[in-house]
Amino acid sequence: MHKTIVIEPMTEGFILWRCLHGGPLSKNTINVLPKNKGDEWEAHRVTNIPLLKKIIKTYGTCAILARDGDQIVGFLRFYPKILYSMKEAGTLCLQQAFPTGPSKRLVDKNFPSLDDIHDRTLKVHCLMTGSPFQEENPYQRKGIGTRMARELMHWAKEKGWGRIETTANEDLGILYANTGQAGRRFWEKLGFQVVKTGAESRFQGDFLKKLHKQAVAHNLNPEDVHNQYTMHIDL
Ligand SMILES: CC(C)(COP(=O)(O)OP(=O)(O)OC[C@H]1O[C@@H](n2cnc3c(N)ncnc32)[C@H](O)[C@@H]1OP(=O)(O)O)[C@@H](O)C(=O)NCCC(=O)NCCS
Image (cartoon, rainbow, N blue to C red; front, side, top):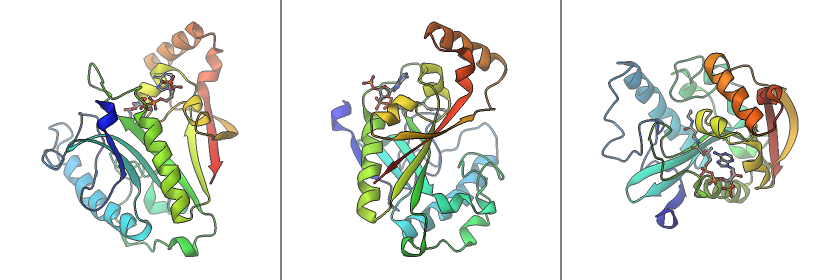
């Protein structure tokens, strides 16, 4: 099955304006909004579609998609690093309201063309294969995430970007399954190197307890689960 999956940059032909938490999405299902969170979904839709279209027009794309027939089963989102410095961008999470997600005013900002950008760095925002809430996920650990990352590297080099930056955590299954980021090993296999080790503050409560347990089972110092690695590759 996974060999027939097509990996391709997102185009205006299909705007993946939300994530795959509920399972794969297609042209027929992307606008069928989940019942939870009421009007919030519509607010994200109205903010994200014009924003993603403008980014695609300016830079070519901002996501690599994995497609199984007409179903999108994976994505890797990334943005020019310069966009993160705009206060209207929040942290650019498309499923959160500002200031975590983008403000609806971001689309009105001037996005410099690649020729006018001094720091030609792309930043990986998040990646996902299949749905984290499916009991069995037929799309994970089949090399699809790696294929999307390779496509990003190829696309970025061709366009003239100089560097790709990402953040990663330790290589524990529970972190791969929950954070929207891949582990350090995933990126090292692609040639990325750690350039900074910082502290992750978002793991708390029961999740943190489970994390500590899994770390011990993997002979890892439980304190290391808080490591957040900044990694990059020069193209
Ligand atoms: C991060 C993610 C995209 C990785 O994609 P993937 O297609 O499963 O990864 P790949 O098959 O290309 O894996 C490449 C390498 O990464 C590492 N890796 C991947 N998944 C791993 C896991 N669960 N545990 C440990 N290492 C893992 C391995 O080194 C693997 O190589 P191997 O299979 O030869 O050992 C995927 O785990 C994912 O979608 N996670 C869910 C994220 C999510 O939905 N979060 C919800 C909050 S937003």
